[in-house]
Every structure is written in structure tokens, then in C-alpha cells.
Image: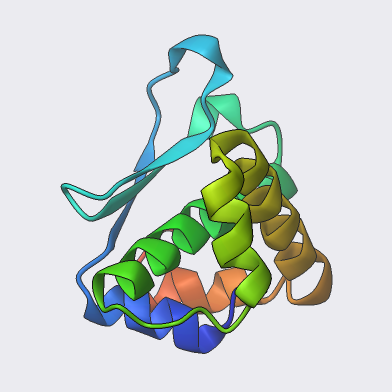
Length: 122
């Protein structure tokens, strides 16, 4: 599950979050660009606030994982390493489940993200 510490780590490592109003092909809801160190959430492709929150959580999980790999840290969840090595589709499913779990257990985490990354209220 995504934590406040993960969010702070992402912020300290320079991750930016952009809320984009332009529609994307194929219904893309969000992406993490590791080259630009940026999370992008496509507002028009997220159907409601919960969907948008889960998208931001999902992309921040990718950012966290990228940062931890870059820093050569061992993940707190050993299952994640095994999943990443089994392929992208399984990893995406794992990340999506973690994002949904985060929303279900800590939906208020989005308020912290809004404040630290200075986002408009979702």
C-alpha cells in the first residue's frame, strides 16, 4: 500500500504531478514518465474522483518503485520483485491492486498529495 513516506520520498526525489485536460487515445488515464520524473493524470479519461485518485496512486506507486530501484533499495514487499520479473501485465495488475487498496484503506491520502504537490483540489 502506498504510504505517506512513499509520497514524501517521491517528492524529495523531484517527482512532479501534472493534471492534464487533453483527452488521450485508448483511454489512457495516467502515466509515469521516469525520464522527466513526472506523473501525468489525464482528467478527461478518469470517470470520477475515485478513479482519478486511484490513477494518481497508481502512477505514484510506479514512481516509488522506480526510485527504490534507482537507489538500489530492497522493496519492503518481496512479492513485488518476483512479480516484476514475471512480466509487465502482471506487474501492472499488482500496482493497480495496490492503488485500489490504498484508496479503500486511506482515501484521505489524496489530501496530503494535493498539499505537498500543490495540486488543485480534486
